[in-house]
Length: 293
Length: 273
Image 1 (cartoon, rainbow over the protein chains, first blue to last red):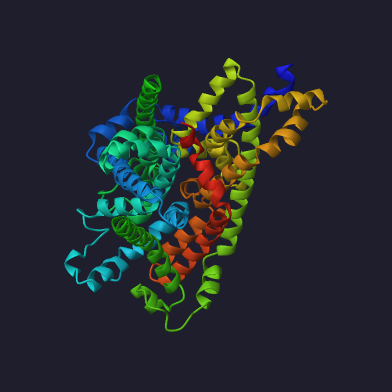
Image 2 (cartoon, rainbow over the protein chains, first blue to last red; image 1 turned 120 degrees about the vertical axis):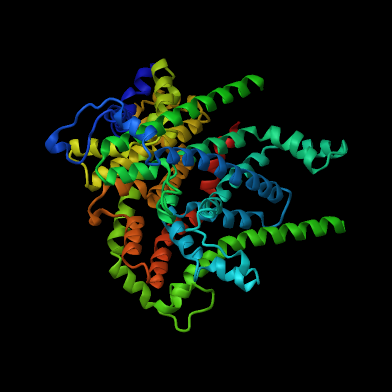
């Protein structure tokens, strides 16, 4: 069989060209431009090489960019913990032969298909201090003392963002966990039961070891999502109050709209480097696990 | 037995409470979209005193929703159809002809699953190609963004399609193009449908790409149109809620129709390991 003839290489050309031109090329160019003073007036004045100046501005100036990087990392870690653990517990609960499992899954997955802009707007209304549904419900339950300025109180705003993010994401994470749980043979649990294992034993010695695949998938999706997070923060708080909830991508967008393209690409390049480091780390851990199995 | 009963009752209560947290916000949005401006601003759960269906006609007109809807539909349909067909062709060759080059290209494309897009320089690339602020430009960017995911998912699926089919078809005189489009593609239908639905919803929901790539409101998809409308009419919550309902309906319909494909496709990776 002549493989060249049945599987022509030109099938690859169009997707590869698109991928290179619209994805890879901008990333590479971004690294280059991050060392220049490229801005909205470059058309007239030209673009000049400025060395590390953009990076010095990011790391050494008092403009909070470092906080933005910190927030991005913090968001990635916390949002994953908040979603993964409850999602796993809900998945286990649904899996243990509950009637109406399909319906519950459909409902809980629903938020994750909706546009972030929409979710942001809905929660801007729900979390409104004066009229919002959440504060109204708290008052109706005689819990008025729990009322908060959800989106403008410095101590509260991140918690609100995490809450909204979990509201959207838990169903998605749970669905992947459910698929993982489906592949564990029932006999394993029966054997554990005979050995007198309680819920925590079963979780620790049967469920978790069998679920490494779906846990890894959720982590990989969750981490890459967390590092790139933009929409939800842009719509809910736009980085405010002040710069309290600014992340890398919101700073990058601000700088872009102010015409400071060089600075914006420098921030994007930092994000690229962080993603690369995390990526290498993930690939290494995955590789190790495969060896162990 | 009774202990089990109690347990299952508690579980149902927990599940129902969880579902309520999903349903109540939707209910609030829906109910308030029919109220007058003053009533909607209170954002409570009571039924409207008078059902103002006119909110919808009003918002469709003021919010430029017809244009937004057409743009969203165009971007999502064309970009996704193009992406899924192109990626299935590429994935087919990558999977069947595992030369060193093709294996490398596969992992090279997979990198796109993780790395962020640099929109600032992307705008620059587009303007060099005279594609910035045009519909084809936006569509091509959406198509390129879905290549890593589609290639990954479809290639995984092709490994389960027997190679003997290819050989039989070639012996019967089929060329590569007719082999792929007439024999292989029909077999890839489930995975292609999954990719199509997931990516369609992804493009429909995307906000960041049009935010960077379209400066003319004539090119705005629905998500941008809604956000712009919100910016201009911050106090008209009745209109904003109606706008939200209209933007959600298409994705919810696609979700309901394609549900089994979504769950199956999303989790195929997880199950395999």
